[in-house]
Length: 417
Ligand SMILES: Cc1cc2nc3c(=O)[nH]c(=O)nc-3n(C[C@H](O)[C@H](O)[C@H](O)COP(=O)(O)OP(=O)(O)OC[C@H]3O[C@@H](n4cnc5c(N)ncnc54)[C@H](O)[C@@H]3O)c2cc1C
Image (tube, rainbow, N blue to C red; front, side, top):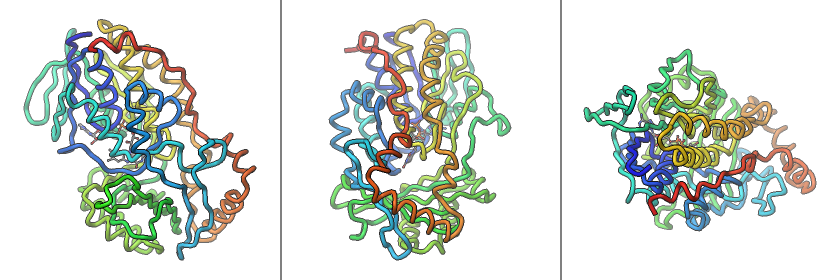
C-alpha cells in the first residue's frame, strides 16, 4: 500500500490510532483537525481488554501504564462532603469498581498518539473538510480554507457529531444516527484544592444533576489541577441546542443549571468560567443503520459507533476499530470496498455488545429528588461494604472488554519498517 494517499478528519483517539497503523504500512496520511491545536481536555478514559492489546501493538503500553491516573477509587459524597459509599480500585478486576484497571486522561492519550505519529503523519490544525466529490479513482476534497486536494481514501474520525459523516452519507437532522440518552456533559479543569485528594468524588444534586471531580495525579505538580465534569439529564431546549452555542454561551447555560446545586458547585463553576479547555457534549450513542462506508470513504470511532461516555467503552472501541480498519486496508490495499466490508463484519458484533447499557441508564444514577438520592446512596453504601455482593455484581456489570478476537496483521502492517 506504499504511497496510498489517506485523509483522516479528527485528531483525538480514533484518527491518530488509524494513522499510526496506516503510516506504518506505508500510506501517506494527513489528519485534519478543526481545533487550532491538539485538544488535551477531558477526564479519565478507560482502556480495557482488547483495547490494551491494540495499544501494546502500537508499542505504547508502557507509556500508557506510566500515564495511568492512579485514582484510588470513587467516593459518593453528600452536600456536606460526607462519604456515603466508596468503591476503591479493584486490581483483581473481580469486584464492582468504578475506576477501570487502566485509566488515563483523555488528553494524555491523545498526546501519546500524536507524539507517536507526528513524524510520519501530516497534521493540519484549524481546518476541516468543506466538501468531497468521489470519482472512480479518487476523492476530491475541498478544505474550509480553500485548498483542494485528491486522496485515495477518506475517513471520518471526528466524533459524535461528525460533520464528515454527514458529508459522506448526506445525513440531515431526520436521518441523524445520533441516539440521545437525554443527558449532557461538560468537561474542564479547575484549580486543585487539598480536599480533592486521590479519590474521585461523585456528588448528585436534585434535578438529575451530577458533579464529578477526579484527581489528575499525573499532572505536573506546578499545574495543581482537578478534572471536573458536570452532567445533567434534561430535555431543556437550551441544552438541546448546545452545539449551536459558543463556548461562552455553553458555559452560561451550565452555570445557570448548576448554580444552586450545593456542595462545591460555586468553586467548580468559578473554575469553569475561567477554564480554557471546556468541552461540552450530548451523552448519546451513534447507531448507523446503513453500512459504515461509502465508496472510498468510511467512518470509525465515535463518529461511527459511539457507545457513549457512560459505557466506559468509547476509547477501547475506537482503538480496536482503528486497528481492524487499518489491518483490512493493508490486506486489500487495491480493493477498499472489500476492506471496508471485512472491517465492518469483524467490528459490528463487538460494537453491539459495547453499546448495551445497564437498563435505566443514565437516569437511574441521577435521581430527580433528594429522597431518590438518599435512597441511591443508601443502597450504594450497603453494596460498598459487602465485598461478596460486589464480586457478584462485578460479574454482570463489567463491559464486554474481550468480546472480540483481534486478527494478527503484523505482516501486512509492517510494510514501512
Ligand atoms: C476534548 C474532549 C474531551 C473528552 N473527554 C472525555 C471524557 O472525559 N470521558 C470520556 O469517556 N470521553 C471523553 N471524550 C470522548 C472520547 O475521546 C471518545 O469517546 C473516544 O476516545 C473515541 O474518540 P474519537 O477519536 O472517535 O472521537 P473524539 O474524541 O470525540 O474526537 C473527535 C475529534 O474530531 C475533531 N473534530 C470535530 N469536528 C471536526 C471537523 N469538522 N473537522 C476536523 N476535526 C473535527 C474534534 O475536535 C476532536 O478532536 C472526549 C472527547 C473530546 C474531544
